[in-house]
Image (cartoon, rainbow, N blue to C red):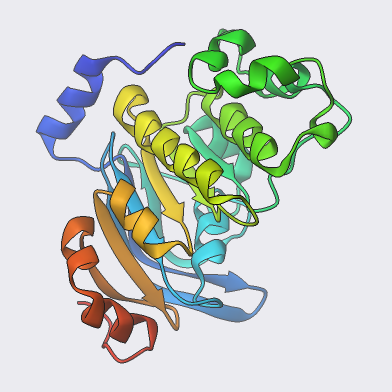
Length: 253
């Protein structure tokens, strides 16, 4: 399928600008502030694992970046261009694509139809996604509601990829899935970043699997980033990681 031009990705990386940038970001639901003073950068072609205990604000942050929730302060930018707060259409046009934890498939439409509905004008043909998700070929004409949980998650990821995301937000991809399926999906996340140039933010409770596929990681707790660094370094420092989950670390500057 169509990938982002390698020279364009390389040019951006050499310029030092992040694909996704959050600065002093505060957001929440209604009058409740869930996270604040949040800074994140994600480069094109890289994966950021966003970790933390339940209720830390991870899913709310993804919804905010995708424009489905307005932010209360700060800035979200894609390739240096600020996104309007609470505007999912503008976020989508900027290349932000969210895979929500409930997958949000059209269950009465076939696999092919789900992909065709999501395809942007001039985008790759639905069958080109079979290069990345070959298991969907034998389910091609079936309604999405008839697929297994793992197949539905593959379809949700394929539907995101057909939109040629610049920024891919993935929320709890492994929820309720068998371990072998989960490992396959994590490999796919790495492939999407590497081969298609997307900046990926991965919210995940399988900590070691997420750290194994990510380049960088950040731990969110009580609305603040309390730990961040190279994923491989955090994977080796289980004590510090545990302290971050337990809320024993102060927010990072």
